[in-house]
Amino acid sequence: YQYPRLPEDRDHFRLVSIAPYNNVQTGGCIHGKMLVAAVDNCGDYDALSYCWSGHTLSGNPTEMQAEPQRMVIDTPDGTGTLGYIPITPSLGMALRHLGVRMPQRPIFIDQICINQEDTDERGRQVALMGQIYGQCASVVGWLGP
Image (cartoon, rainbow, N blue to C red; front, side, top):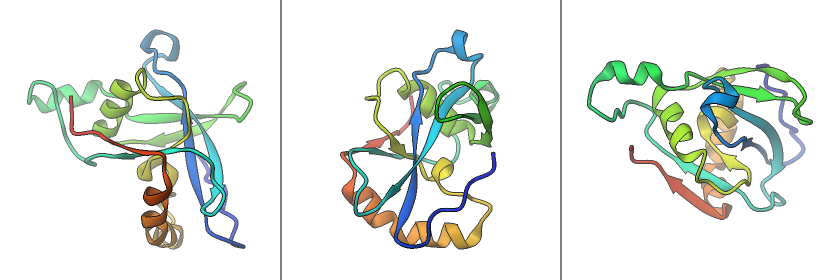
């Protein structure tokens, strides 16, 4: 997935709208659509707080290999795919478990919504995180299964 540059005229950030998780229909992949919002005019959204590394159901590290390892980014109209974003197994587990329970509104997930390979963007986005988390409708905390 090629992240489009965020507008620089004011503080913007990305949100992702996650499709309901259905292992059969999605081939085990998490699907979502990217949205861009301005910090001062972003509407209702949630934010996910989670650990970037390992939870397993049984304590067996090989169990994490079964979790989704990437998120498929769909076109805005849902008719195609723009690419993939690698995700950690712990985020895959969180999205798989929460995907059937979460309200269908956009969500801020730092690992997905921030271009992790662009150090300038990452620095600007980290500076906005207080506002991003402070303005969201709710923070979903994922502690594990």
